[in-house]
Length: 333
Image 1 (spheres, rainbow, N blue to C red):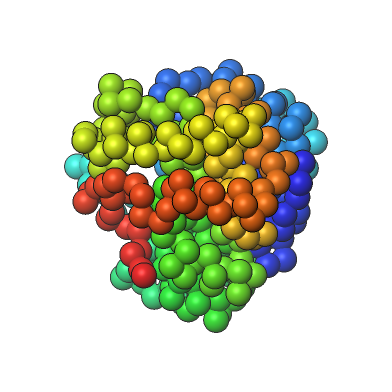
Image 2: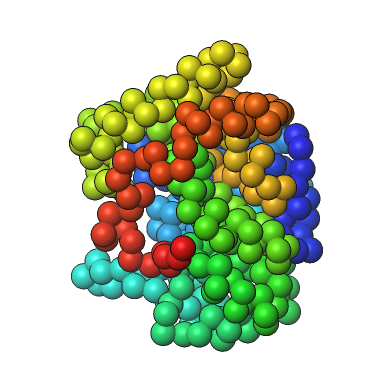
């Protein structure tokens, strides 16, 4: 498995990782056994970058990783490079809000470490910015966590390049996590460039467009069974049918190359910069193997040029988030 650097001074990690939201029921039913099978297959493939969060299944994702690691004995500390997150909260009436206070972040970090069964994580993200607290102050809090030895690096999820620059002026930022794929290319409006400039990793979630960039994209019936996709503009008609049809040429090209569409999508993303780290999520070991093959697929200028013609900037129908889903991520560009 090809390795890439995680962050400014971080360890070498596999070129692709695993987004462990799929260890919960977010994209469909799963259980601990299936999650453990994914982790075991990941190790067989040389994948050692795990990305989770305290809110994925309200701790369930971390618990399932922790129960797998617990079976490994002392070796559990060296098997994976683990990233987790905190900062998203829910009130008693179900309203979502964000808390970047030192007290909240420390308490949630301690809870994550306990569920994972480890003493330190390689990367700790602020999952969403609390706009009431200057990012410089949040950065100082995170630097304090490094000094305590509970985290090795820190990062932010879904922030603008300007916010990254403000934080990096205080302390090097290990990574910024953002949706990035052939269907969502917003990071190319400055985040891709700024992370490279500052030596931070760009950790790309949903790298196969939440199934659109695959051989079997979700139909409307499937989307309606998932809380997130049910109201997502790209998975509502008529956008969904237009998006599926728009990717037909890309699917045909993948077939001509003798690979799966998701394999080609991962390969394209890895060609966008040596600091880009895709973290696809899956509940299928077969699909995980297909995704991993994208690491070894080399694309030349002709292939990349053709992909650009097949799926040019702005081809996707509908915004990537609904109005409610846009609460939290920083817009830019």
